[in-house]
Length: 267
Image (cartoon, rainbow, N blue to C red; front, side, top):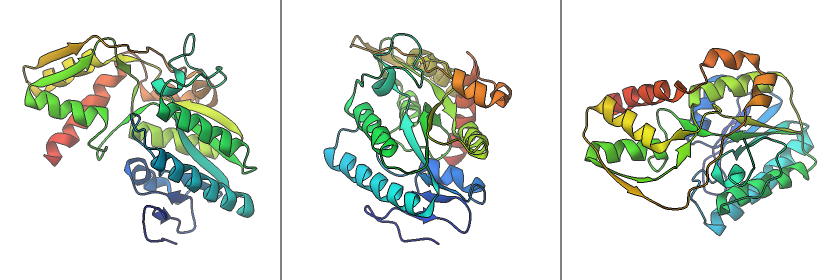
């Protein structure tokens, strides 16, 4: 069953399989596995901009989560919720950010996502929480880091915060991981879904400029930057097949190359 999309009633894809709430970047990429996991509702709608600070947007997502969790509790289905493994969640952690780390959130977005995790855990609904790294792939929102950096590189000038880093992961690998984790019937747990590598933004810009054959002027700003690495030990233990995905220091280059191929084709 598909309901019309609106700010209060996000697009829902069901059709007898996994129900997907939302119609954005991740929701679209999950549709190929929508015929699987009929006991699961995926909440792929809400605030997706890590620098977002709108209280109204945060309140709408909290309300949507509450409504979806109530529905899952009534129907006995599991709710898959996407949180963040980014700076806002793990930057204050001593060492790699683990699912069992003591969390001191560092941004309004991180605080918002952490509160939603707690809200879901207290809801009584069966659930799985995935803390995501920085997803990259075709159709990514224009405001996200990689599409924005590509535009700046092509314009010949990029602003960089010295020392900033991101954990990049291909959205197709994320879908593969989600499919495998859901098949394990995991409930009541949190799993980081990332590559485990913190890639300096300066290295990302250098790779993009080299591939695009562009000379780039770098405006490097010295601003406070929180460094963190996302631990994927739990993910590797649950899904040893992650070894076939190529995670490691050079993984990000293939992610960027694949994105540029689709970006160029779209352009």
